[in-house]
Image (cartoon, rainbow, N blue to C red; front, side):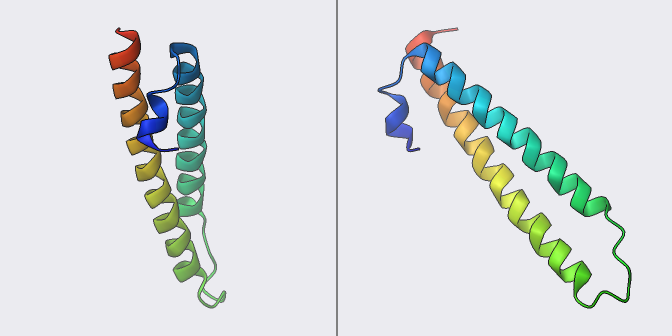
Length: 82
Protein backbone atom coordinates (compact mmCIF):
# COMPACT_ATOMS: atom_id res chain seq x y z
CA UNK A 1 0.00 0.00 0.00
CA UNK A 2 1.10 3.50 -0.77
CA UNK A 3 1.03 6.34 1.76
CA UNK A 4 -1.52 8.17 -0.40
CA UNK A 5 -3.90 5.22 0.05
CA UNK A 6 -4.01 5.93 3.78
CA UNK A 7 -5.58 9.34 3.16
CA UNK A 8 -8.73 7.70 1.81
CA UNK A 9 -9.12 5.35 4.78
CA UNK A 10 -11.21 6.07 7.86
CA UNK A 11 -10.00 5.66 11.45
CA UNK A 12 -11.31 2.12 11.84
CA UNK A 13 -9.62 0.98 8.63
CA UNK A 14 -6.35 2.61 9.69
CA UNK A 15 -6.52 0.90 13.09
CA UNK A 16 -7.22 -2.49 11.50
CA UNK A 17 -4.36 -2.02 9.05
CA UNK A 18 -2.01 -1.01 11.86
CA UNK A 19 -3.00 -4.15 13.73
CA UNK A 20 -2.26 -6.38 10.72
CA UNK A 21 1.07 -4.70 10.00
CA UNK A 22 2.10 -4.95 13.66
CA UNK A 23 1.22 -8.65 13.78
CA UNK A 24 3.20 -9.30 10.60
CA UNK A 25 6.16 -7.39 12.00
CA UNK A 26 6.08 -9.49 15.17
CA UNK A 27 5.87 -12.76 13.19
CA UNK A 28 8.78 -11.74 10.99
CA UNK A 29 10.92 -10.71 13.95
CA UNK A 30 10.23 -14.00 15.74
CA UNK A 31 11.09 -15.99 12.61
CA UNK A 32 14.28 -14.01 12.14
CA UNK A 33 15.28 -14.76 15.73
CA UNK A 34 14.58 -18.45 15.24
CA UNK A 35 16.75 -18.56 12.13
CA UNK A 36 19.56 -16.69 13.91
CA UNK A 37 19.49 -19.15 16.80
CA UNK A 38 19.37 -22.27 14.62
CA UNK A 39 22.43 -24.43 15.08
CA UNK A 40 23.38 -25.45 11.56
CA UNK A 41 25.79 -28.40 11.40
CA UNK A 42 29.14 -27.69 9.78
CA UNK A 43 28.66 -30.55 7.33
CA UNK A 44 25.73 -28.71 5.68
CA UNK A 45 27.49 -26.95 2.84
CA UNK A 46 26.43 -23.32 2.54
CA UNK A 47 24.04 -23.63 5.48
CA UNK A 48 25.35 -20.56 7.29
CA UNK A 49 25.30 -18.55 4.09
CA UNK A 50 21.68 -19.46 3.40
CA UNK A 51 20.68 -18.64 6.99
CA UNK A 52 22.47 -15.30 6.70
CA UNK A 53 20.57 -14.47 3.49
CA UNK A 54 17.28 -15.35 5.16
CA UNK A 55 18.09 -13.14 8.15
CA UNK A 56 19.06 -10.28 5.81
CA UNK A 57 15.81 -10.66 3.86
CA UNK A 58 13.76 -10.70 7.06
CA UNK A 59 15.63 -7.66 8.39
CA UNK A 60 14.76 -5.77 5.20
CA UNK A 61 11.13 -6.84 5.55
CA UNK A 62 11.07 -5.67 9.18
CA UNK A 63 12.40 -2.26 8.16
CA UNK A 64 9.76 -2.02 5.42
CA UNK A 65 7.02 -2.92 7.92
CA UNK A 66 8.34 -0.32 10.38
CA UNK A 67 8.20 2.33 7.67
CA UNK A 68 4.66 1.25 6.89
CA UNK A 69 3.74 1.50 10.58
CA UNK A 70 5.16 5.03 10.76
CA UNK A 71 3.18 6.10 7.69
CA UNK A 72 -0.04 4.60 9.05
CA UNK A 73 0.55 6.23 12.44
CA UNK A 74 1.09 9.62 10.79
CA UNK A 75 -2.09 9.26 8.70
CA UNK A 76 -4.03 8.09 11.75
CA UNK A 77 -2.81 11.03 13.83
CA UNK A 78 -3.70 13.50 11.09
CA UNK A 79 -7.11 12.00 10.37
CA UNK A 80 -8.22 10.71 13.78
CA UNK A 81 -6.29 12.86 16.24
CA UNK A 82 -5.07 11.05 19.33
